[in-house]
Amino acid sequence: MYYSSKLLSIFLLASTLLFLPAGDANLAIAGTCVAGSSCPPPPIKFIPGQRITIEVVNLTQGVIQLQQMPVTDALTISPGQVRTFLGGNTIDPNFSLIFWDTMGLALKTDIIKLGARNLRIELRPGGRPPGNRAVYLNDDGRVQVL
Image (cartoon, rainbow, N blue to C red; front, side, top):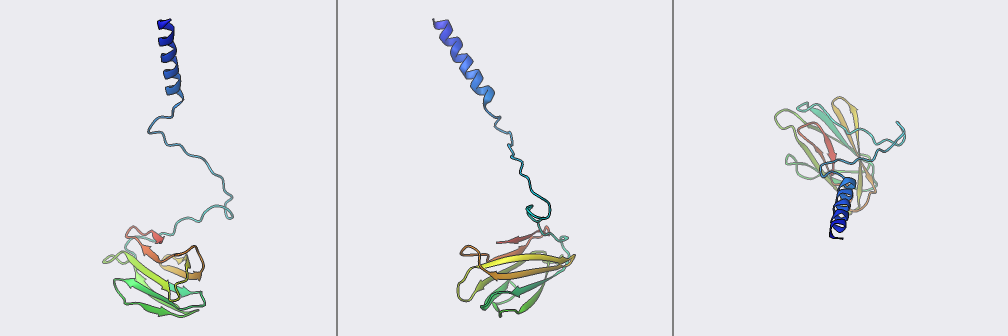
């Protein structure tokens, strides 16, 4: 009796370990998408150290304040207005722009790579509060919306 219960315990332990995934195993679930319609767009990236022109467009009905950190004080951008900045050079490869609606409304940000050296930032109304508040060009060339 003792021998059979010990054998049963060993069998249960072995079968449990057999069906557990390995601790370092990376499990992935493959998703499908249709190119051009449901696939997420590739991340926007520029050549690190390359000087780029950044244009910011206010597509809201309200006034937006924006500030290139730590270069400028707060600047006003009216509805439909475009402001241009330079960023991403080898001396200071990071570019940081913060922005906010003067009425406190949430903003949605769309970033568009217009060419090898041109980035367009479109500020629109919407998004979940608090909305997007910054765009950051990393020194590795990646663009992030925060």
